[in-house]
Length: 120
Image 1 (cartoon, rainbow, N blue to C red):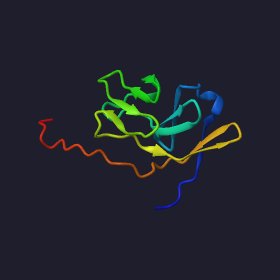
Image 2: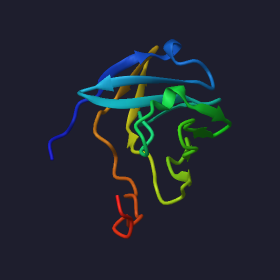
Image 3: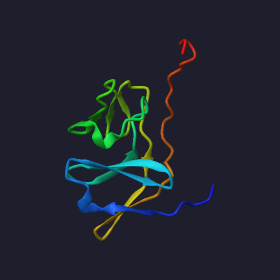
Protein backbone atom coordinates (compact mmCIF):
# COMPACT_ATOMS: atom_id res chain seq x y z
CA UNK A 1 0.00 0.00 0.00
CA UNK A 2 1.48 3.40 -0.94
CA UNK A 3 2.39 5.89 1.75
CA UNK A 4 -0.31 8.49 2.27
CA UNK A 5 0.93 12.03 2.77
CA UNK A 6 -0.16 14.11 5.73
CA UNK A 7 -2.78 16.70 4.76
CA UNK A 8 -3.52 20.05 6.35
CA UNK A 9 -6.70 19.63 8.43
CA UNK A 10 -7.19 22.92 10.29
CA UNK A 11 -5.58 25.35 12.68
CA UNK A 12 -5.19 24.11 16.24
CA UNK A 13 -7.17 27.17 17.39
CA UNK A 14 -10.16 25.90 15.34
CA UNK A 15 -10.64 22.97 17.74
CA UNK A 16 -11.87 24.22 21.13
CA UNK A 17 -10.29 22.73 24.26
CA UNK A 18 -12.40 19.75 25.37
CA UNK A 19 -14.23 20.07 22.06
CA UNK A 20 -14.15 18.56 18.60
CA UNK A 21 -14.11 19.53 14.95
CA UNK A 22 -14.94 17.44 11.89
CA UNK A 23 -12.83 17.73 8.76
CA UNK A 24 -13.10 15.95 5.43
CA UNK A 25 -9.81 14.80 3.92
CA UNK A 26 -9.76 12.92 0.64
CA UNK A 27 -13.47 12.13 1.12
CA UNK A 28 -12.92 10.73 4.62
CA UNK A 29 -14.83 12.30 7.52
CA UNK A 30 -12.48 12.67 10.52
CA UNK A 31 -13.11 14.15 13.97
CA UNK A 32 -10.30 15.97 15.72
CA UNK A 33 -10.80 15.86 19.49
CA UNK A 34 -8.97 18.32 21.75
CA UNK A 35 -8.40 16.79 25.16
CA UNK A 36 -6.77 18.62 28.05
CA UNK A 37 -3.28 17.73 26.83
CA UNK A 38 -3.41 16.69 23.16
CA UNK A 39 -5.27 16.37 19.88
CA UNK A 40 -6.63 13.00 18.69
CA UNK A 41 -7.98 12.09 15.24
CA UNK A 42 -10.72 9.43 15.03
CA UNK A 43 -13.51 8.37 12.69
CA UNK A 44 -15.74 11.35 11.98
CA UNK A 45 -19.09 9.63 12.39
CA UNK A 46 -20.80 7.18 14.72
CA UNK A 47 -20.49 3.69 13.27
CA UNK A 48 -24.14 2.95 13.99
CA UNK A 49 -25.96 5.67 12.12
CA UNK A 50 -23.36 8.04 10.66
CA UNK A 51 -24.02 10.98 13.02
CA UNK A 52 -21.11 13.46 13.10
CA UNK A 53 -19.08 12.92 16.27
CA UNK A 54 -18.28 16.63 16.61
CA UNK A 55 -21.99 17.11 17.42
CA UNK A 56 -22.15 14.35 20.04
CA UNK A 57 -22.26 14.81 23.80
CA UNK A 58 -18.79 14.82 25.35
CA UNK A 59 -18.14 13.72 28.93
CA UNK A 60 -14.47 13.49 29.91
CA UNK A 61 -12.78 10.93 27.66
CA UNK A 62 -16.01 9.66 26.11
CA UNK A 63 -18.43 10.81 23.45
CA UNK A 64 -22.06 9.65 23.16
CA UNK A 65 -24.16 9.74 20.01
CA UNK A 66 -27.59 11.24 20.77
CA UNK A 67 -29.41 9.10 18.19
CA UNK A 68 -29.18 5.70 19.90
CA UNK A 69 -26.72 6.12 22.77
CA UNK A 70 -23.61 4.57 21.21
CA UNK A 71 -20.63 5.62 23.32
CA UNK A 72 -16.90 5.62 22.52
CA UNK A 73 -13.71 6.23 24.47
CA UNK A 74 -11.94 9.09 22.69
CA UNK A 75 -8.47 8.18 23.97
CA UNK A 76 -8.51 4.52 22.91
CA UNK A 77 -11.16 4.63 20.17
CA UNK A 78 -12.83 1.57 21.69
CA UNK A 79 -16.56 1.28 22.00
CA UNK A 80 -18.08 1.53 25.47
CA UNK A 81 -21.68 0.95 24.44
CA UNK A 82 -21.57 -1.38 22.62
CA UNK A 83 -18.14 -2.68 23.58
CA UNK A 84 -17.61 -4.69 20.39
CA UNK A 85 -17.08 -1.67 18.13
CA UNK A 86 -14.30 0.89 17.76
CA UNK A 87 -13.44 4.12 15.98
CA UNK A 88 -10.68 4.29 13.40
CA UNK A 89 -7.54 6.21 14.40
CA UNK A 90 -5.63 8.58 12.13
CA UNK A 91 -2.02 9.70 12.52
CA UNK A 92 -1.90 13.38 13.50
CA UNK A 93 0.97 15.87 13.59
CA UNK A 94 1.18 19.41 14.91
CA UNK A 95 3.25 21.74 12.72
CA UNK A 96 3.43 25.14 14.35
CA UNK A 97 -0.19 26.19 14.82
CA UNK A 98 -1.51 23.73 12.23
CA UNK A 99 -2.96 20.22 12.55
CA UNK A 100 -1.99 17.76 9.83
CA UNK A 101 -3.58 14.33 9.46
CA UNK A 102 -2.71 11.27 7.43
CA UNK A 103 -6.11 10.32 5.93
CA UNK A 104 -5.50 6.58 6.06
CA UNK A 105 -6.72 4.82 9.18
CA UNK A 106 -4.18 3.03 11.34
CA UNK A 107 -4.86 -0.65 11.90
CA UNK A 108 -7.55 -0.90 14.56
CA UNK A 109 -9.55 -3.71 16.04
CA UNK A 110 -12.30 -4.65 13.64
CA UNK A 111 -15.85 -4.76 14.91
CA UNK A 112 -16.27 -8.33 16.09
CA UNK A 113 -20.02 -8.52 16.42
CA UNK A 114 -21.67 -11.15 14.27
CA UNK A 115 -24.88 -9.70 12.84
CA UNK A 116 -25.77 -12.77 10.79
CA UNK A 117 -28.30 -13.93 13.42
CA UNK A 118 -30.42 -10.79 12.97
CA UNK A 119 -33.20 -10.44 10.45
CA UNK A 120 -32.33 -7.11 8.89
